[in-house]
Image 1 (tube, rainbow, N blue to C red):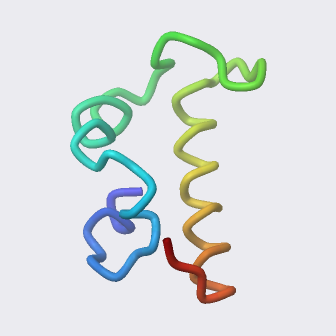
Image 2 (cartoon, rainbow, N blue to C red):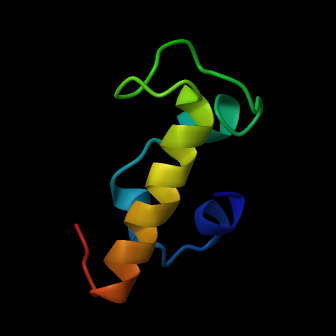
Length: 64
């Protein structure tokens, strides 16, 4: 996720609050407080989802 945030061309920038990610989920590897779709590892699960979303957008040339 840090590599994606460092890439100014990453399409994910238009969809996330970069400051919130850097201050929250990237600081702590643990749970950020509430499960996402019932997953036990809410923080890591959300980061994995965002990485996959960015890869999908890059692969298909999608922008927002």
